[in-house]
Image (spheres, rainbow, N blue to C red):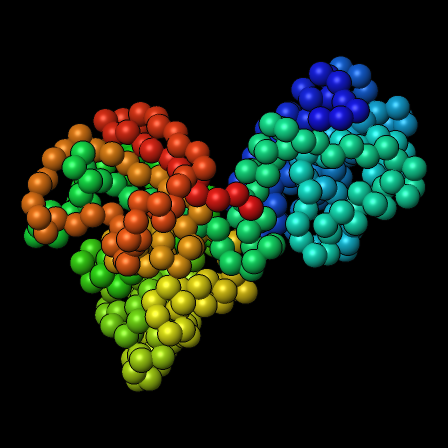
Length: 377
């Protein structure tokens, strides 16, 4: 990082750390943290805590009270906004506060921002430094859903699955409850709460009649905080008496169908409170990409893919899995027809395989959780 000191890097790391406090509360906005300091002394800090609420920079400036900030530096995890949205531009607040030095951890890739805020500050004589290296990478990774949605208009997708030591997600008879341990299942509920949507296929609905709601241990979750439930159901076979339908529209439900779905069936789903998305495309991966375009246009920036092997494989074929978390349970199933976590078309040669950018492993209760990032936005 150019034109910075070790003290600068400490404060910028703090801004990135506190940005994460807004997780699950600010979507479709990004996670942002800000610190204002003079030398080693922190004067104020803040983060974007609620959609429609003050941005991190404004919170940090407010935390400084009446302090003279002309010799202070603002450290912020994301480029300050320069447009009027739910709140006024942060660049105006920075200039009004008299701050003359700003260090930014990552850019804002949206068309309405993308360097404009930094340009405005520089035009007003503010010294602006854009970070590089490890801190910049951390800041970008913090906002992968926001960055993907800004660049391509589709939700960032986390694929979650639980499998046995021999790589199976269900027995030959289709039994899959429960492969992972209690701690792993509790963690998955935390992810549901943090992301905008949960995605499954119609096979999961017919087999398990799930709710797909976030139910973190000991934390009450209001209906308005629940993720959008999304079911890929090409022929609109969803039973009208299933749990997902019974809770719609209080908890939003979208059903993705193909053009082959019968109109009476889709009309019945809509009458029951579901939102029907008609996905176009010549094959399943193309229909998935089209559906994700439509979900992105609805404001969904992130999704937890919990669907079965068929849907997960189709998402992989479509190039719409960005991150994977696999729970590896201490079980062995065997069986030629026991199911694998990913089906779809796959690749013909090892040289064509998708190679993860990162690979991490940690213990979760009696399971191992393997995390792999497939791409960065």
